[in-house]
Image (cartoon, rainbow, N blue to C red):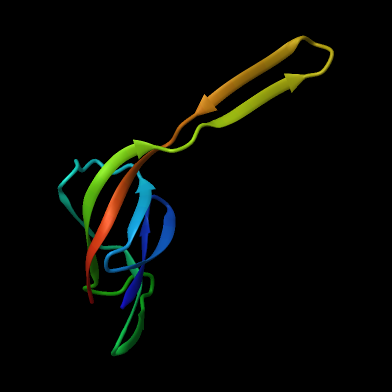
Amino acid sequence: MYAVIATGGKQYRVGVGDTLMVEKLPDSVGETVVLDQVLMVAGEDGVKIGRPTVDGATVTAEVVGASRTRKVLVYKYRPKQRYRRKKGHRQQVTTLKITAING
């Protein structure tokens, strides 16, 4: 059984036991998160596709950790002007472990 969920402006295909990194969530490590934006559920009884979400379907996950991604470097450069800027960014992410798919 698997589901397609939406969180943080992105879509993820998840199954029970999967671990994934999503945009930062306000929950702390060890808490249980219920994701209710389920776009599709596929299982033994067939496929349910939502318009835009599947009614009554939820995905339960446990927060495993919070970290930051690799640094992304951004350069600005103007030729012949002695203008150079280097800036870095590390996005904060939350690691989730999927425990159940209901729907």
